[in-house]
Length: 407
Image (cartoon, rainbow, N blue to C red):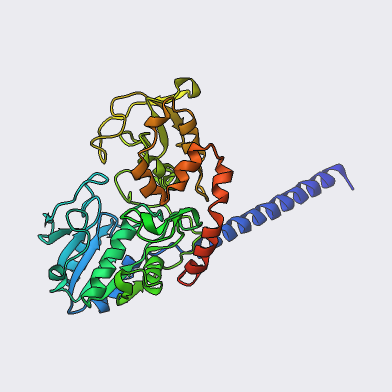
């Protein structure tokens, strides 16, 4: 074959091979796009208005809500209360849990009754002198709607609000509708279990620190296990999520409370939240809440990281205010699937005066048991402590399995 012909043949062959490879590459990209499109986004129950609006027709409605109670839209989110009013739902009252209806109150700060300036609706506090709706407050209602974003940690007070609202509804024959939302820590169950003798608003039932359930599933468990007051049962309807499983990685588009600003704080909260029962600062008074810890009374030679807490949004009086805190920065921590004691053990071991560390009553309320403080003081390792949780976790998982709605 002449040289020119061989050259043309080679060029043609290379062109065909390149075209084939390019075609395969396009097919791969197309398949990837198809798979991505096939994975439908999670739809929160609040967005499923066609399912629950018929249940509200010609009813006098009370709503338990906070800033996370929104209907998501492409052109901007709208609060559930505003949306339902625009749809003609007869809302009579708004019940406000911890942090308030519009989310301006600090953690632990009493929420006052009042009037919502945007809608003119009366706001009844569930985090003030009363934490349960009264008979009088429910007397004019035909149904209560509960829509709060949870983070799946026992001492996060919204499951306590759910329980008390269900108890009030059961006692006064008022049906309750729970609009379900994803649990960003719903992919695992872990931590010490609450002991009956230490139940409080930071844990009203014998469940682990991380319980791996949505609000809707938890509500079903409250009913099914007879955990409501006097073993009563609420007339409960759960409006389910779409396209959600417990393994779904859900990024909260709205901070669920002032001191949980992002995914990192939420994944660390089960472990770092225990610092609330100590004198150690866990990032309150900074822009990295529950993503760091430190104190002025810790060994300065043990750490190369420090910060100074100052009053800010969500924390008017942070622990260790205006003091240099020595500790650890955890802001690069990836998504977790366990509760770990490694950081609280580290902080305790590097506290120079151990008597300054624990706020014993507060720590027991957060942990659910006095045993955890004793284990840390005795020098047990993270692994040794976690081994003592396993029997309780197995027992709870058997109960939990009966009420799961999602895979």
